[in-house]
Image (cartoon, rainbow, N blue to C red):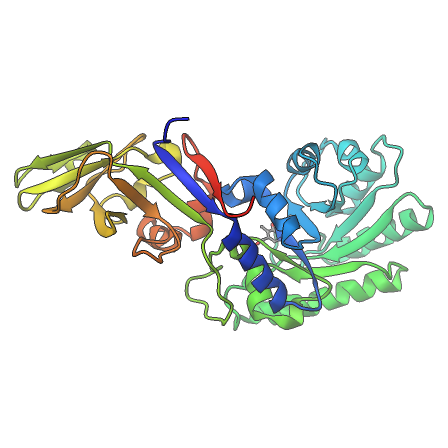
Length: 373
Ligand SMILES: *Cc1c(COP(=O)(O)O)cnc(C)c1O
């Protein structure tokens, strides 16, 4: 195959090392690696395999469709999904041995009605303060009562009780203590109803790194597994290495005169004679237009700033007076160990979070994998 114009190189060794480090943060808990959204843009199937190799006893995804794709690829381990609209194919999920989440008594009824021979394995989601999915207050009591009834009638096996933090990336935020307290009450209610053997889980990456009291029986790690800090302002001792490097090669290089304006809208003008390099990727690949004139890349190990507006297929960088040639390598972001920007740097330059920078990568980006596959 010809060299791709835009390539995301994924370092599986770095990913596995991150998972080991995260497992060491929560020694008493099982590890669930979250591989939803195509493993945050890293490629779901290879990352799932690498996560299993690294000892991840659970995988987590948002949708049934994602879970079924893992099964189709041969994954047979513990697997939980948690986001389903009415009419979702619970029969397919249950039939494939996927654990599904009930966020309300209505959703539990829908799961129990799925036409399937095997007994569904169901986890219950409580809303402890994120106000997103999950049963809240009286609705939690209703869900627990219905789930206990179903389990007694041998119509279901209730395997877990879980929730999700709103502010775990701000360890001192009072919402964290409050959510944990609500979670403890919700678990006590499930126990009292006869659901004693449930797995309890509440922690995302940030809580895994910074909040041991919230580790319970299992931790769900997403962004940190890919080597990205949940919040660049957070400090902790765990070493994480970004697994993804986005790179390409200059498609053209040209010398221009002072006063030359660049790209749509002419939002950038050369202050002096300079050299421009053309990077063959754009917002179709997930490079944010909002990083125009702000973000940097490296060419030949040296930083160069985006000049002018990022386009659909391409953007221009200002190379100054350095010698560069068509075909020279460009690193858009990577682990930062060779002077290149990181996904966090691109997040800051484009006014978003690093989660979005890696997850939205797409279009014509080819993914290749390094390390033991
Ligand atoms: C995405 C997600 C996670 C992982 O969150 P990170 O901040 O990436 O670690 C964990 N649990 C649930 C329910 C999620 O939706």
